[in-house]
Image 1 (tube, rainbow, N blue to C red):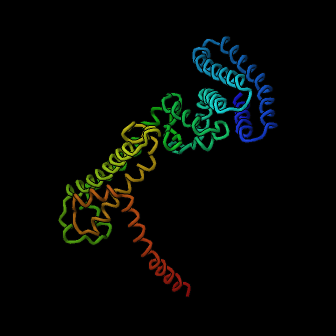
Image 2 (image 1 turned 60 degrees about the vertical axis):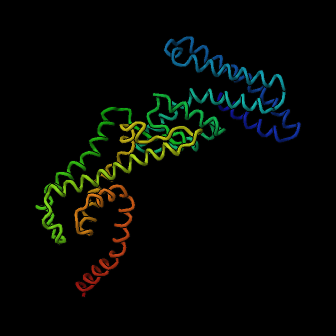
Image 3 (image 1 turned 120 degrees about the horizontal axis):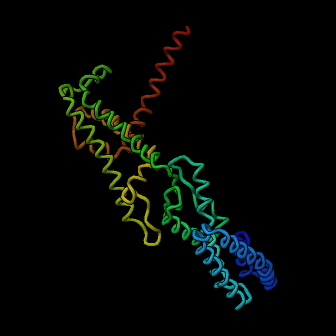
Length: 328
């Protein structure tokens, strides 16, 4: 039924801009498809009446589709020609069908994705829901539904895959909390293990106690958390009035952590490493300095990568010279 409606909608667009012959072709197509659509609605009605559970779950949606189709027929009967009102009526009917058919299709696609990967709704359902207004309306419906195994981000037009298993969601917290706990324990024993790596510490760091290193790493983590919170506030303030509320850490912290588990676990490891590297480069343990290391971890990592890129050629050259000497 949805396919027939989409064909009618596309034919309507063509007929509105074309000659009388194409308008007559649209009317002919409308008459042919009307019979099939009516039969499809009748079959749906019979199935609902034969199954109490289906009736409870979908009766209102089927009634909405029937009412939408009745408006399409009434609008066409009044004008007997393609009109803007008929286009709106068809769009509404397509949208009503999408409310029923799209959730199951979305869940089937999300089941094939790893947690945190995104489903581009506009791209995937462009043929099934040709009008962007209809797709946005469906996304709004999905964002309020508990049936979707993912997070609907209406402004971006994507659905982020999430697990429906509560234990799998809880594992996300374990995954991102293990690195901070481990690094904070290590930080407390920094004076014991750091010299074993053969790193020459600046004089100002030689007498630093484990407690100071612990506070320093903790401060860097606090900077990373501050960055997440401020970014979420900024997103919510910058959202447009008609684009819906973006999915941020403030809206649903537990689910946000779940779908971002991989990136959060990466930063949970990267932040303390960056804190150590820049503390040694800076030559002192500074709380404010480490707070901004955590806060601007993306820029910090870019700086570290740039420095490595500069020294890598020299290291590669030295290795090649050693290998060349062994061959000779």
